[in-house]
Each structure stands twice: as structure tokens, then as C-alpha cells.
Image (cartoon, rainbow, N blue to C red):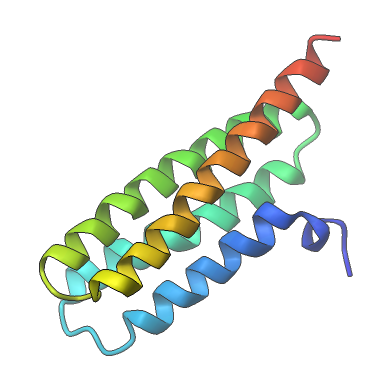
Length: 118
């Protein structure tokens, strides 16, 4: 196992992306499906890219980008609930995980910033 796969926020965000892809596999609304899956896959992808960068400052910047994608995803999940693509329960579970990921990324951002100021 590589170091990235030991990063809990990356593992969980990858799992969320897989869950979104599976949930949207039967969706016929191509534009919505592409938008929500793009946002979902952007989260672990940006975490991974930032993790491989040369400094904590750059890692924090990519975490911020991933956090933005997570906010986009939360909005799309809520829209998906409103138009019936997700049940309330399923959407709420996805939203709960996305919000937890946002908090985890913010904590990592704060740690990166603190350590780069030392």
C-alpha cells in the first residue's frame, strides 16, 4: 500500500466518488450525471495531486480545491434529491459523508498551514 492510500480523507473521498458513480449509473439525465460524477471524482483526484506536490503549502492549496469540489457535490446531491434522483435517506447519507470530508479537509488545511509557518 502506498502512502496516499493510508490517507483517510483520500480513501473516504474515493469511496464517495464510487458511490456517486454507482448511484448515477442508471440516470438518463446525461448532463446532470456528468456534472455530479465530475465533481465527485475531482475530490480524491485533487487530494492525490496535492499530496504528491513538493510542499505543504501546495498540498493545502489542492485540499482547498477539493473542498470546493465537495461543496459543489453537496449542492448537486441536494438538487438530485429535489428532482428525485436520490431518495431523501440516500441523499442525506451522501450529504453527511460529503460534509464530514469537508471538515476533514479543513483540518488538514489548518495543519498544513500551521506547519508551514513554523
